[in-house]
Image 1: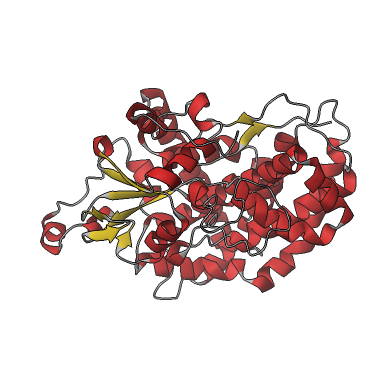
Image 2: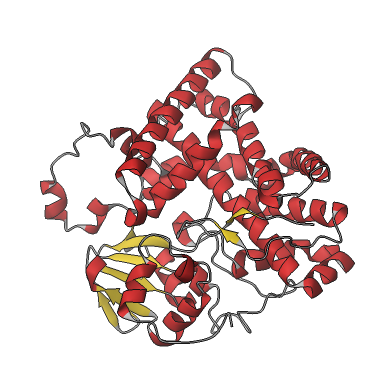
Length: 418
């Protein structure tokens, strides 16, 4: 059973934070139940890392500015001052030049400045302007699915929808979108960390960073000469501001928006549809009452969170759950576990599209609350509306979900339907 509680051996816990393991990761919920019930704040000696799973503790870590993203901000002041400059002459320089300029991985004031320059693109007014275009894209993709002999909801609908949307926002030509798929998947694996970093993958990562940097540098050069109505042109128009983005920051921000703007939304759409099709009574309920679509999206985010975890560093010694987290130690907060915490959600392992309240942490919280959450929600609602309209009798054709082999992001590689 999904909510069955059992004891996990040390070796099993260790394997959880290593490379993707089908037996361990395809169904993470028994492990989350174990953490929530028995070891909500657990220290892993071999990683010098803490694992935090309860909703209250996860929310606290995410909101407390004493937990930071940058290594140097977790060090004592004297140690920060003694740090040698970071060497740029390494094979990983193209990757580091992007990651070092991602707002996702920075603290204030840099994070605040980068986020502030981009945030206007995700306001309610901006979302309202995008709504009709997203509907048109979703309708076109849904209609095209009917022409396929064995429709794959991920490859034919859930993947292209957010890619087209974010590409249009950035100003990427339609003929270039297909290149983004591998680039985005590669950076999703880079974000996952050390579990699967083989020499081949290192080479792939560096090549992807070089290629995507060159691509956006060329696109930015075009927009400098011929501005259009897109995000890159808007950000370039602000170049006179004292806090304007440098070219490297602009390139890195475009890459981040591409990765974050589609990896999570593909999973949101696919995971929510999977849950609905695995719970036909909820699918029937939604068909009968489409006003529950926004609520169904929120429940999909909670029940099968697109991002399963994120990390912070303690900048001071910190007491949490009766444990002392030492300055500089990594804290891995388990979003997927927090969203199944019975202390916060009644019957947490039950999929209920009418659940209220539903204050899940799928988009994190605090200063790093997902900037693109309004866009992801809008795309999710429009996607469900299109699926219900075109395919009210949809059923799963696969015997079991084909989960992608990524520990950080939870989503399917394919999802065949009838």
